[in-house]
Amino acid sequence: MQRFDYRREASAESAARTMSAALGEGGFFAAGGPRVPLRQRAQFIAGGTNMTDYMTLDVIQPQLLIDINGLAARHSNIEVTAHGLRLGALVRMAQAEDHPAVRAEYPVIHETLLLAASRQIRNMASLGGNVLQRTRCEYFRERSWACNKRVPGSGCAAMDGINRQHAILGTSDRCIAAYPGDFAQALIALGAVVETVGASGSRHLSFEKLHRLPGDTPEIETTLAPDEVIVAIDVPAGPWTRRSHYVKVRDRQSYEFAVASAAVALHLEGDVVREARIALGGVATVPWRAREAEQVLKGQVLDVALAEKAAAVAFEGARVRAHNAFKVGTGKQTLVRALMETRAMEIQP
Image (cartoon, rainbow, N blue to C red; front, side, top):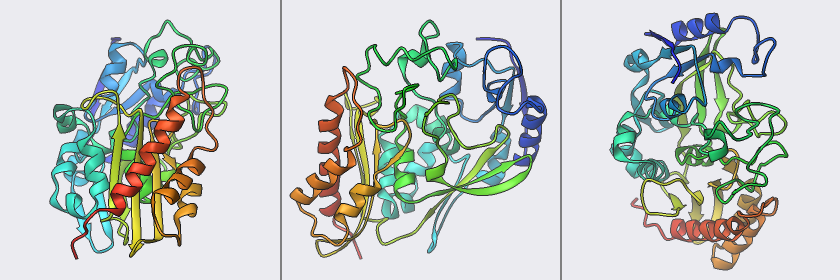
């Protein structure tokens, strides 16, 4: 781990100003030398459960850490209204997991949190930090391997390496690293919105637009400005939120990332699908909304045959490598299971 400076801020506005000052006027990349994202010069830190791993591995080497736990007084509350759920960015994963309204009204959120990491990590990790976690690609984590996400232009060792855990949706010729999170799948399925604060002010951003596909610039992972910090996540209420469910398939039952996962929310009238929300995890480079699969379901009677048709559509664009082709079949089966289990949920009036 490299030497770094530390500063604690008490408001989102002051944190953004400190970050802006630390980065200067250079945009996303430093002038001269390797094209290292400026955001890596300075980093916001809350729970630190992901960032400290990568600092220890020297994958990231920030010169300044800006501690935003001082924002908790304003941004660590859970608010539930008839209009939806508001989650402060400094809410801990375990706090949201245990909240009775989240369990009852937004079960898919509860399940994505419950099935993530260990309870000890969930006690520390913030919701805002969780959605911004970096990939667990071993070629990203190990500095001796080529990785365009870590060192732009160096190549991608995963392409011809052991790529069993890598993505099959949303990939590019520069990067096939899978997004590792669970919570984000619930948020993108439910149409969440994030509120941010930066040096230039605040804004609201559709969660679906938060993460960037790797394309030619896999080192730029989100649409956030370098000095922008997430302060809240808003999840709108809908007739599908209570009938929502998350299925996570992994190599072992606990403390493991998804091989394939599916977050599903349904509005049913009898067995007829009036609205369907589907997100896929473990198989894509970003939190993945399967809109084409949703359209297959709308207005139809949901049975196994229809679920299988939707699953086939969801994976039509898959691009497989030597070791991850199995994810197409596993992903389809995971989505079919999630759809049928969601249909079978008993919803209390």
